[in-house]
Image 1: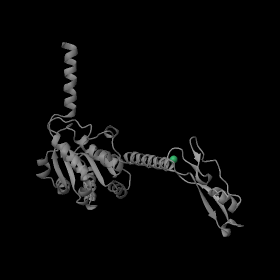
Image 2 (image 1 turned 180 degrees about the vertical axis):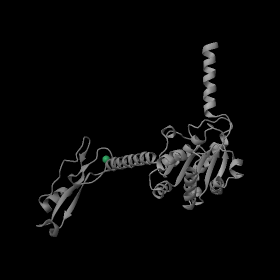
Image 3 (image 1 turned 60 degrees about the horizontal axis):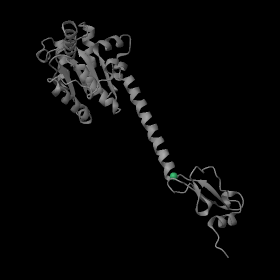
Length: 291
Ligand SMILES: [Zn+2]
């Protein structure tokens, strides 16, 4: 007698094994045991399982169930990766929304950083800070970018913020001026807690806020609570470092002392971005008008 093919054996055995065609696609074929095989990777797309009597609720039987071939697994893997990527992007967008960052700084990146000769070192410091943030965070190490108006201090700080946000590290970037506006009529403790929930707090433009007793008090509270939380902050300011170090006014001195305790001062000098843009504009106009 001719040897029975496995499918016949199973058919004979269970009597009612089904061989559904639902997984059959173009190029697929029926191979060993009558099961469907993938035409692309050659792996089977079905398998036979035995359902014992106790589960079958009657006599034991065999059923054919679909299994993933390599191509299918590849499809699932890609789909999963895509979902994870989209979730990550969504998460980053949410974090950017929550960062309170000015829309003009949203696209600030080290990749787009304009090197003007004098700011190369600043960029390096900032990029190193972002790269070593885990360590900086551990040590509660901050930065203080100081220098003339428009030198790119805020932009540099925003580059750090965006690099960290891309890596899903919570950052808040705001200014004392904005905080003063937002804190009025709110629970100060809660507001400070919100600020301190970020792993990095960037405070833009120290010294631009009003010089009322109220404002000075708030600035101190913000800096002090950050310091107490042992979490790093980055500040930008147009103030001179010497002004901060030799400050005689006790009301300001205690603010500056807190900052200088943990923030490494970085001088941002040179022609400002604004000045460069103005110069380029001048050159263009000169060509048009005098050329
Ligand atoms: Zn396949």
